[in-house]
Amino acid sequence: MKLSIERAALLRSLGHVQSVVERRNTIPILSNVLMKAENGTLSLTATDMDLEITEAVAGQVIQPGVTTAPAHTFHDIIRKLPDGSNVEIEVDPSGNQMEVRSGRSRFKLSCLPVADFPDISGGDLPTGFAIRADELRSLVDRTKFAMSTEETRYYLNGIYLHAAENEGLSVLRAVATDGHRLARFEMPLPEGASDMPGIIVPRKAVGELRKLVEDAADMIRISLSQNKIRFEFDQIVLTSKLIDGTFPDYARVIPAGNDKVVEIDPKVFTNAVDRVSTISDGKSRAVKIAIHGKTMVLSASSPEAGSATEEVEVSSDAEMEIGFNARYLLDITGQIEGEGCRLTLADSASPTIIQDTADSAALYVLMPLRV
Image 1 (cartoon, rainbow, N blue to C red):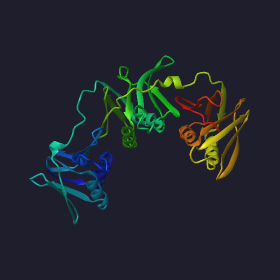
Image 2: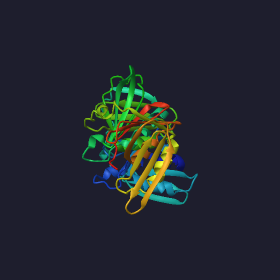
Image 3: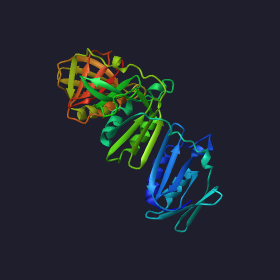
């Protein structure tokens, strides 16, 4: 294998794929990136056995071939080369060593056998549909913060994606919850998605996908089965195993009888919660909210730090007090982009619904704290 490639293009693609590779691996081949050069492109693949990213980058292929190289070391080498430089890559006839040349720099890296590199991308993915890149970014951003990190409840460690109905309309719905808060986002059901199974996309796959689609401008092709999902766009293919578990009946968590409505400017609300929570106890991050008609008083106290209160104007006729974890509340209000935030409450012990008054696509549920 022998090729010449631009440093900037190679660095960008290497940066995408090597982030999947764990720093410590008990299986040596999983520390390597698979490199395949043919027909004017270099294809780079990395995997951790649960997630696989492949990206193709244009290059001048002098001699086609395939090899594997240490992913993080290779990435660090390319990252430290000067801007605008060209990189020459050549694998010796034995296949055991790869030489990387750029200007006066020379590096020799050990290669592991290509036959040892695992392939998790195979298998039939019967359901397929396409959604716009900006829709996928919204779907991930509006829900990912509510994913759980508890290993014991592994089935909550991802985003639940399924076809559903809302007021007679077919929707693609994403849900995430950690037991303290719940985020639900929906969009019109894409063509071809009506027969999709309910799936749980793992947290790591969600994180890698969001980084990769940051600059994607066009459509994202999604293919899936009961145990695997694939995203294809630009020159990138991301394949992930799905969480093998049953997502809880989240509809039961969304209260239907909340009758107290409070509307407030989300930026004013967010800033007030942020300021008051500076004093809150470090463990619970509790902020108390007292609603008296058109006035909301936010307060927090801590034995060590003291106390804080702030008063803000709201649109409401409710009279009640409730407490929330400030960080959870800020995670939700940070998602509200419109001019109005609506809180629908029942009492101090019941979950609260939070929504953007101008956007019905997203719905958030937050459990209260005793304060």
